[in-house]
Amino acid sequence: MAESLIPVFNPMEMTLLLWMIAAILVIIGFAGLVLPALPGMVLIFCGLVVAAWAEHFVYVGWKTITFLALLTLFAWLIDLLSGILGAKKFGAGRSALIGATIGAVCGMFFGIPGIVAGPFFGAFTGELIARRGFKDAGLAAIGTWVGLVAGSAMKIAVAFIMLGLFILVRFL
Image (cartoon, rainbow, N blue to C red; front, side, top):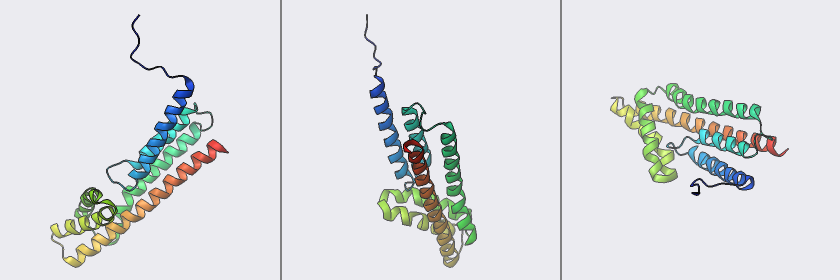
């Protein structure tokens, strides 16, 4: 009889494997809260679901998972709307948002300074390309940057709330 190529895990090994996967997803998810190329909130949510699955949803059930999903959606909406609202408040146009997005992606290759400065310079450049003056482009860049930073801060807060809720439900 040929041996199966699929490894067989005993229940203890499977639980440990799922907890390891969950931890990795949550850690990468937190990195994704500041790195624009990673879907941070989604990875955190998936990690928490895998952690609940590791224990067969005994401690963290579907009500908690549903609430965590709603928080994930809420954080995504905050992230989406904050840049737009900040940009609109300071008179930025679509070109500033496109530039800020490009700047954020390019900035991540330059570490923390690039992540912070990339959206600002991208929005500024986008507005200049749209033939706006330096003053208007500067104001649009500031507004876009403030909106993105505020959205990121709120997204990070929601991520910690999600993790705290999971820990509270699981261990108390």
